[in-house]
Length: 333
Image (cartoon, rainbow, N blue to C red):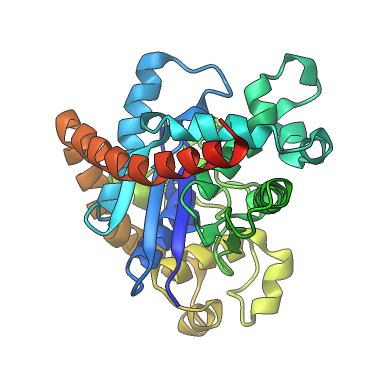
């Protein structure tokens, strides 16, 4: 069965191995499945829920697009664009914000986490972020959305908003309630320094992550220094329950090798972490270095990246503006 897939990535800069394995690698796989129609968005409107430096934001939009392209997302097969090029996202968000209920937004745990203790100083945009995310999805009649566990609640909200709009205006199935696509394995890649924390660009230690623009030597050095433990190599998956660093490294190896954890454990049975880390470093270099080289090449040609976004924006706008215009007629504008 064919799927219409929408997903977005914030242009935060310095994308790393966790972003690649947890999201972008999956985007490429979905694109290459027969009959899937994929729409991948650089969600720059979401980025400004926190103050941004204008030049840095522009650079990050282009960098994120370069990562999409270098990783294998093909603009001939998928639509690639940045959100701010399509005014229907903001317009649709306002309409759907008038359908959403305060009580629903008050239950969103991610706002509480991101706003911290002083919620009064958080931007209104951060609070209504999930409504914009809902518009992103519903304007394209997306059937499926790849999400991590932290975004699952937002997808449930989008389903609630779609159903309420359809009910309020007596238009059954006009807004399609999307289904989540949750990556079963390797969706969360953890810090190389602490297996209990997610790999993040905000970690002060560069050795906690592998950046997608790291050199071969940097990758090899970071894997060599990655935290493990003093126990022997694992023999069963169940052992990972109390060995988060070992589980993380085996997860990276298994994902990049497109194989199960069980197969990776069997492969290194009787060997030591020194042998494993050398093989892991070689694999990460093999998979990530070509992406890194292509990112660097693409980033030297802003005109090319901008042309990809412009072309994708025109395609996206054809879908989204049509849907918003239909919504306006239904509402009575």
